[in-house]
Each structure stands twice: as structure tokens, then as C-alpha cells.
Picture 1 (cartoon, helix red, strand yellow):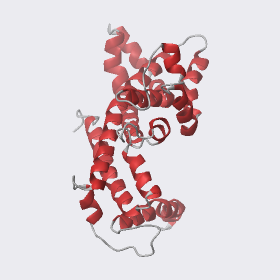
Picture 2 (cartoon, rainbow, N blue to C red; picture 1 turned 180 degrees about the vertical axis):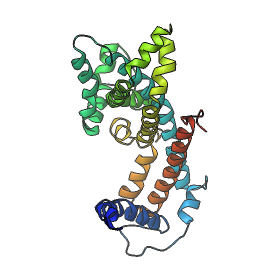
Picture 3 (cartoon, one colour; picture 1 turned 180 degrees about the horizontal axis):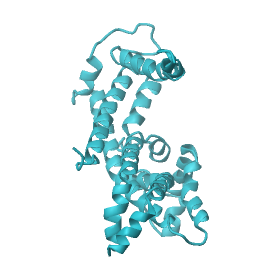
Picture 4 (cartoon, rainbow, N blue to C red; picture 1 turned 90 degrees about the vertical axis):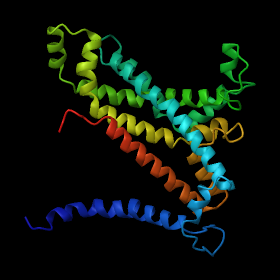
Length: 287
């Protein structure tokens, strides 16, 4: 085998990775260093001016951005624990042996095959404060799409309903990968169900937990469709997330420079969150 053979096999992937990842990231950062209005031919270089404006609490863009980041944080903190614990409980149930098990699994996974547009429009009408079926059947008078905290409850609830099945299937795959002999040995030693869960199931699920927690944080922090379609950022942009604001700034206000700067600041926060997740789940028993 010649020295260049591995690189020849890697070349197609590296070419695609460069074209669709490295180049867009580089262009996005270059854009963030300019006053980049797509309607104007001139794109003056401003250096870190867009970033400085975003970190200035007195600026219009800075105030709007950190309000959106706060909304992103609220949604992430509220949704991630539910989307980790509840799917794990569902997976534990689905891992058992009972009649109709496959139907049970399909019912939980079915909502995830729907697109965000379908989910958003469906729940926008169900949660409408005037004509929505949720208020009608529950006998409530709650403005789920325009008041706080009902708007957050609605967004988190819809997201959990929609994506719970995916995490459940991932956890189920992890549970089925844990050797049954470990559970049997723990039972022989007299360990109860809770003890087996702590000593066998959770350690065996460590790699899956790292993936699910990290992926769920990233997905929650990038929530856009639910907020756009269900609450439209109401009330007073309190449910307008960072991704929502970035899209609005770049595609509606045509300020791509500021939008790109917002994107890189959000990306920095998400990378820091990923580092914390990997650190929290690191196996400290290893040297």
C-alpha cells in the first residue's frame, strides 16, 4: 500500500466537509466582520464592531439579542431535563416483554415523523385561546400563545410530545446493548430493581446519556419552528429564541453581518455547554 492510499479514500469526504462545512463557517465569520447588507453593494469592514455592539447592553441589537438568549436559556433549561428523564422511563417500559410491545413503541415514535410545520400549525390551533380544543375540553380560559408562563408551558409541552419518541428509541437501543448477564448477576447478589438501575443500567447507559443530553441541549438551544409558528415570539418577544432572532435579523432585516455575529456567539455558548456535558459524564474512575 502506498503512503497516499489512506488520503485517497479520505479525499471525497474531506472535499465535501471543506465545501459544506469549513467554507461556510469561514465565510460566515468573514461576514460577521462587515456591515453586510445584502441589498447594498458596499460591505464596509467593521472588524469586531458587530460583536462589540451585541455586548453593549445599551444598543438596540444588543438588548434584543440577550433577550433572545435569555429565552433560549429558559426553553433549554425547562425542556432538557424532561426530554432526558421521561424518554428514559419510556424506554425502560418499552424494554420489557408484553403483548403489543411494537405497537406501543410505534405510538411513542409516531409524532417525530411529522415536520415542524405540521406540528406547529396543528398545535397553534389546538392551543388558541379563543377557538382551541385544549381550552374547550379542559374547561380553561388560558392564552397559551400570548401570555407567560402559559406560552413556555405550551412550547415545552409541544416539543416534548413531538421529540420524546426519538430519545426513547435511542435509550432503548442502549438498554438492549447492556448484557443481560449483568442484571442476572446483580439479582443473584440480592440487588433490588432500584439498585440494579443505579449499579448496572445507568453505568451501561453512560455513552448513550452523553449523546442524548448533548444532542438535546443543542436541539433545544436551536429551537425555532415551534416559537415561530405557535407563539410568534409573543408576548413582546419574550419567547423569541436566538435562532428566531438570527433568522429575522439576517433574512428579514437583511443585516447579515449582525446575524452572523449572533450566530458565532451562540455557537460559543453551545460549545461551552458541550464541554461541560462531556466533563460531567467523564468516568472519574479511570486514570
